[in-house]
Image (tube, rainbow, N blue to C red; front, side):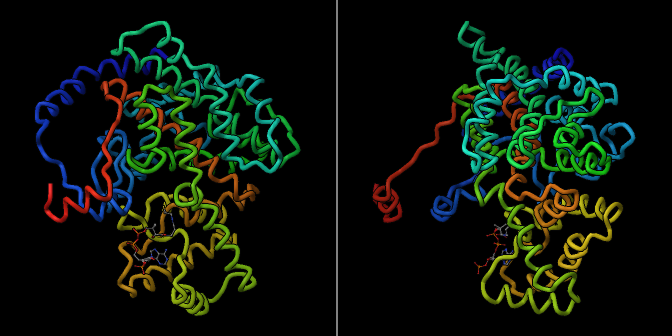
Length: 435
Ligand SMILES: CC(C)(COP(=O)(O)OP(=O)(O)OC[C@H]1O[C@@H](n2cnc3c(N)ncnc32)[C@H](O)[C@@H]1OP(=O)(O)O)[C@@H](O)C(=O)NCCC(=O)NCCS
């Protein structure tokens, strides 16, 4: 897409110059790695530079420097809606510039032109057993689309490495264009007897997903999609799916191969599956009390659960030290639109009750809710009740961020990643002061 290519190209000399100046300080030490970090998931080791987004412990995710509430104000809105157009968000992620309405619409238009999915992709998914997990189907669908990669074709023909990012950008736009249709196909195949609803030529990217899963009478659900896809698009460069994608793409694997790998990481229970755990927990609590409990009864219940050493899903965070602004944005939406929903009322009551209890224990670094504490409750209200699909929703949003990281990594000529491992003997010898 010429518009995005030109905007990135215009910024490249400055970024390349900054990187090259930094590389001249190659011996400057950013951080040390301790033994405990090696044995605890390299937690806190700064191994990545990402200018696309950054998780600030107190402000939450900053996308291109903007907080969630700033973005909700500044990003161009979908027609007849207060929610942002995914096309505008994608432009910001990729081009590092706040788009005008017209630019956001141009991305949406480009996505509509490129959204059709080849039949062989659908056929390969149809052949899988009916109980295959939807995340497996998503990953397979992306892998099947790899045949369409512009980068891989041009690479095979021979191309200057300065230009790798251009065909990765083409792939990025092609893949993201197809994601709502791919996800809707998986949803319909698994839960709606394989119905097919073609994409609408009038709807934006996010609403089109709602339309294709046959929610076409529910304008509010379109807004839920717009909000959800906006909130989950990126979470800096070193979480499991982001880092996996980056690592795989550093081998010059194309956008499809790299994002499928990232989706396989997202499918893990410690990463993208947490939102389904959280909804299950809320439903169990509601059923336990036969509806919304009194606050004092909930407090006793929560104390007992924590006393048994059980985790309350949706609370705590590895980096954040405040209420996740993505939780707040969804709670505000729910209070405006579905205030009487019992699960939403329960989400709010837990929010009023639990942080104080968690803080009392003195163990937890962050007693506040993360985005998963409410995600599922919103989807559930609008009829998307199949928990195991929620990570697919997360995935199609997150790929907008993942592909932006890939394009910039190639634009800044980042090399293949190859850290180093050591043996237990070596580590023991190092600690003992031997060579
Ligand atoms: C997100 C999470 C993995 C962060 O882990 P962490 O960085 O190790 O958290 P902390 O260092 O703050 O935790 C310290 C203690 O608080 C406890 N704790 C953390 N989150 C808790 C929760 N949600 N409920 C009850 N206790 C909790 C831990 O079990 C730990 O206790 P321990 O020392 O007895 O083992 C963790 O808070 C958690 O598992 N939350 C629930 C699952 C969830 O919402 N995941 C989605 C994350 S986006």
